[in-house]
Length: 68
Image (cartoon, rainbow, N blue to C red; front, side, top):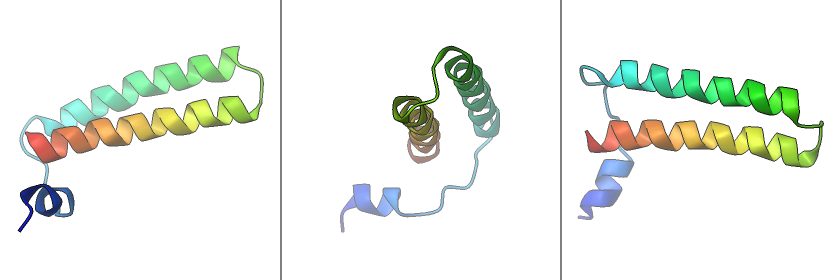
């Protein structure tokens, strides 16, 4: 059995304090998303910036869920 695979593919119910961390991360990412929206011309690159910001938040949340 590979413990990393087991950990990555199981449900992680929120522990005390984790939902608040998720909220902080989402709020800061939303600030950056609005900055990108305001400052960058509509383009493929802008779309990729937003997509990768969304991915960053998801991976940051996964880090908290999987490792705390």
